[in-house]
Image 1: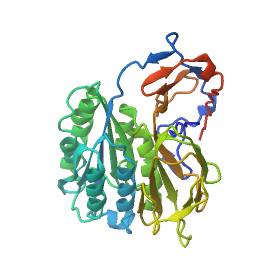
Image 2: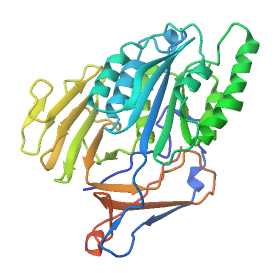
Image 3: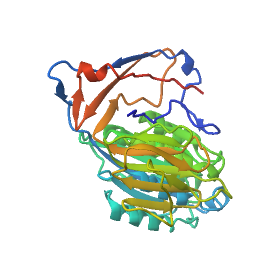
Image 4: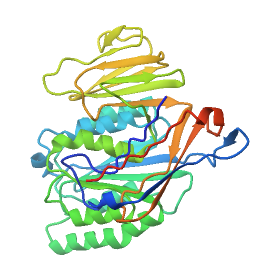
Length: 378
């Protein structure tokens, strides 16, 4: 089985990462496979921190122009559906006021169901764009670092800090974000990922929030890219294991307890179907036991519990953003790549294979393991 790290070193085509160096080709990468000596099965260093993810979505009136088809809804449904069980997450919307759209708590089937339904309430009716208020309210309990928690904040907006008709009040609010809110987030170990859904947004502020916390910033000019951008945000805030998908085919072995297929559809495409290793074929209308299928406007999310080993085939359009995410006892644990790299800055990249939380260092197993690191630059 080959596990892959889905985190890209460069943004997707058509997107812009404002603090990602264009000269990454000069970056020196040192790759080493971290293998601990005897005993044959070594305990991993420590328990994985729990992901705590909070999503802040702008619902101000200007979104009627920048997101006329309300594509924030399917993007949020995709993001929340992908979150692994055990993650802690919540969703807030903001305009003049802040609203907790999905209550913060542990992610399970019931939480995902509530999140999918709540996404339908996203609108563009807010009178202002009170970024300061939503940052404070959504992170009220993040006051100090917590080694047991991996904290991520995703902020989507299309505007400037706008809390009143008086420009001086808006400027003062922006200053408080920079001088008060941002230092607190840094102190609490929060990573801020910011999305500007318009060239008219305060890109300088959003970039500053992301860069100062080791996060990712992108500007997109069309809401059509929101679903795929939220997929990339998911891959940054979650430690999901994935399998390589080639020509919409993937090999699954008996170490996999659950497989989730994300399949993007083009307008007018036939309905997606899946072919199992035994040659049987099924779609949303004829689900075998142990299969859950969620269909949205432009993608399908198919989860198979205890999938039979062998080659699985997705019968749909080829798409570079199609994914296969798995739950498995065999995991590849590797260095988390920073989002902001300097030219000629050496980077030590380590990787280790674990089974049931214990590092594998058996020579008879590792002789068949090949590790490669591919650099992608913009």
